[in-house]
Image 1: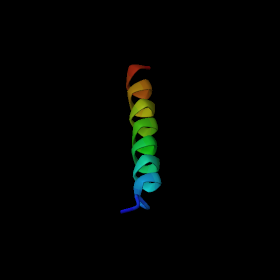
Image 2: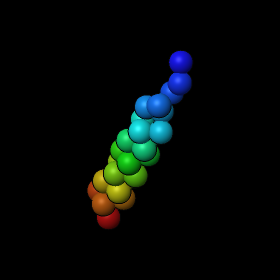
Image 3: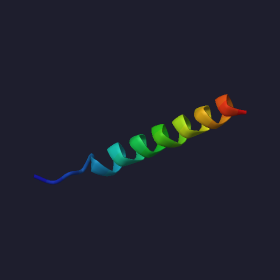
Length: 29
């Protein structure tokens, strides 16, 4: 079984992580 959805999951997780970091940085300032 090939993981054809793996890159999409990684992209969504990375996008969520970057968004979360942006929210944290904005809340600190």
